[in-house]
Image 1 (cartoon, rainbow, N blue to C red):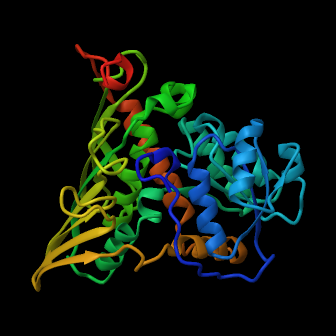
Image 2 (tube, helix red, strand yellow; image 1 turned 180 degrees about the horizontal axis):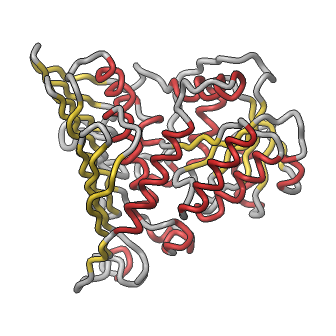
Length: 370
């Protein structure tokens, strides 16, 4: 796992199988983003059996099969879609194409598990809502910055236990390292990736809804900018937004592609959760200048101050719960409406965003002065 490259950040956890061998076979279609490895790891550790892969790029397929020995390289999407033994398709294809693939997957009687952002247009969300209602199948979304982060999962557990009372505000920051030299062309095209608030902002909005216990929210204000990557005029390296939930909780978040090379990981992702009886701060990937390990959580409430080091101690229960939801028709891992609502709100934030224009200088990685 590469701690310096968020695109290929693929956590591994403890094996905790919830199904017997061959009970839940799945395949991968679309390897455009490295998150497919984290998604596959989580499903395998929960007992899923990865049996096939398809991508039009043979080099991507070769690397994938080397990582997961025994996986069959399919000759086409249809070979996987028509295989009745496969129960789920996982995908991290180009974001703008994820909605269309999901419709095909569900039409073939399979569940779908897709990287965020699952959609780039509101009409794609609406079609997915209709399709899940029609088929009864799952359209899971990989909101990895909560689901695949032990400290973020533990924060939710503390809130459920009442450790900080009622949540009234959440502040989230999601900085990322761009690594532009290793990015594909679609990464810089907002029509392909949806814009910064739609893309990495989706993590932030999903965690807000979860921590606040909200079913809906309103985007009050949002803005985007391109401060440092002027060679890519349509790209956005900064975005922020303010939301208020249907239960009165408020939210501010910032996302960016401005992580400096001196940081020991790809992004110093954090979240601060204020409750009526205390607050929580999660330092997801590093505790800067103090501890290079990840998954630190700080809790302050009526009982005092506590620091938790959580790496390897919480696990990733979402994946097992999601597999069982697919098999049993339950919604214990994440409700379908929650997954879709987070996706819808990040698109709304993107569409409402004010574009900040102004002078800028090329990012060092692009100017030759690095």
